[in-house]
Image: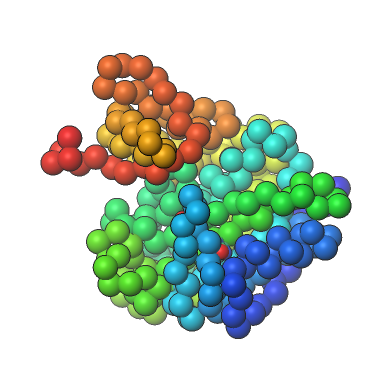
Length: 252
Ligand code: BTN
């Protein structure tokens, strides 16, 4: 049985660390292979978006995982990853963040980190490539995104050291990934996520999923990590994908 053992490969420039990690997973890379690049020329985001990745402005990181848990529970891996980013930022820079469902890490309501998990079929079975992008400096995103994005530099007032974040991140990831795959790991991850996320319960949100837009109040997570949303007519809807935005009083 494979175990998570971080081995880091570093690149100056890649189209996407997720693509490189997927390629290596197909070639048989062991669980724990990490790919880090100084820049990405075709960084990928959730929902087919691009992830702008200028040189030296962010941590662009992917890891190959070969989960032992049932595939229906794999969404919990991205929740575990967001817990790990949250904890790594506290440990490295005493920076306390929030987590927006499912796995955006926010500071002062602006996005600091995004996580993209992609499955890949390999000769050793289905693997998961977990990609994490953390904005380190404000050059990580264009000025027109400053209302919605932030960086570790903006939030702490100092230029962060990528190596320090990377070290804390790999330690925290290993811990949460192993926790998830232990006895009652799913429940523990859901509990730890809910402690760190203001979105877990009682938050007024809009959820956009293609043409469908729902509004309501968050009511916790399902056992597979899906979001429970109580709509304004009191119906509970289970959300498995979509873009969540907080509804402030003026938006309602
Ligand atoms: C999101 O849309 O919020 C997810 C962004 C994920 C970006 C990271 S950067 C490292 C890895 N490689 C990619 O191409 N994407 C992920």
